Amino acid sequence: MGGFTFNTKGLWQKESYKGMGKDILIGSAGSMVIFGCGDVLAQLLEMQQKERPALIHPPHSGMQSAHHHAHDNGRPSLATHTMPASGLDTQRLVVVASQGWILNGVMLTPFYRVLDILIGDTMSGKFFPRIPMKIFLTMVLYMPASTMMFFFLTPCLEVLAEAATTATQQQDQHHEGEESLMHRLQQSFAKGCEEGWTGVSRHFAQTYALAWLIWPLTDSINFRFIPLTYRPLWDSLIDIVWTTILSRASHSEPNGGQTAMPPSSSPSHFDVPLYRSPDAKIDGRLKSLSEVLSGLDPELAPEQLRPPPRHPPPDEREVVLADLVHISDPAEVEFDPREVPRGSMTRGGRLECVGEGLRCPLEVHQRWVDNVPADGDGDSDDADVHGGQGKKGGE
Image 1 (cartoon, rainbow, N blue to C red):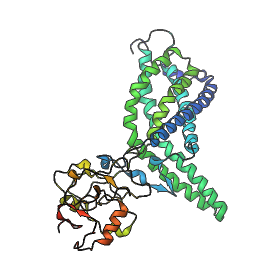
Image 2: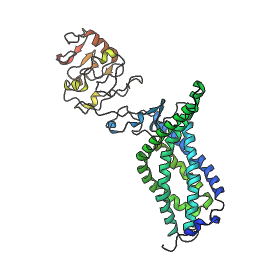
Image 3: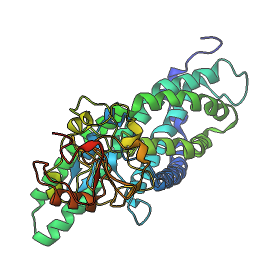
């Protein structure tokens, strides 16, 4: 084949594998450290990303998957395996580092040895065709298997580790038998396998495509200049970047950490953040978003319906998957009187309620609800209702 033939007979000769045990130990130890460093970098990047202010409901985020809300004994699934507030997730770190031993130590070292047996030494002689053949075999045989195994093993190991810890603690506290412990582990293993397959189907194609942009170049250097014993360590150095990519992918939320919202049942396509007021009394008096928008000025731009960025909603206000109007932060909002639409309410040049409650300060809306009868016949004395409309907007 282009100047060389595959040495299949060498695969069955014992001397071909001389010294491979030492190579596996070197590759395993070095790869565990490198994989661990890669996961630390991934976690630090995630911490920095989470510290940045982000929109709670960016446009079109509803098309993202929301499968990551599944939990097991209060523990998020792999897709939402988030970092503890105190710092690094040590359990995740151990799981990822252990895969350095499995993938680069136990799997990659023998694979490189087999390539050298079949194709021959590539540190001397011509570059073609031996090195391209090694790169091709690595990319079509080893890379798919190792990538799939990483995404599959990560949730399995994490779920099993968590289940073993939880089951052991409960066994000590409640004196549960070994059968109960084994049953918990079996259930956790089944759940881990399910999450692992989900991770493979979600991330494999994109990650494998990215691998073709990174590894052929590094493998050409590896096969040409690095001795066989240290080739897994060279890959481990590149794995500082590669494992960061893999670890972030396997632990990433499907929509980048943003809350996925289902499409609204309202015919309107306004991307308005939806929140539930902490006061049930107010919730019972709010109209649907479609009813509110029908009473507003048609020339009102969608941006005017959004809460001012300087007044973010409180953290304790629950985001709900419902077609509700938005109640902004409990603070009055400066507003140009010329932009106030019909059905709005102002006091002293300050906008207090747009339409049927949009951008309405919480305590003002409470007073408004208390002072205005349900049928909309009464108005607050000091209120200036634009357009001659009260709470019902002219109903």
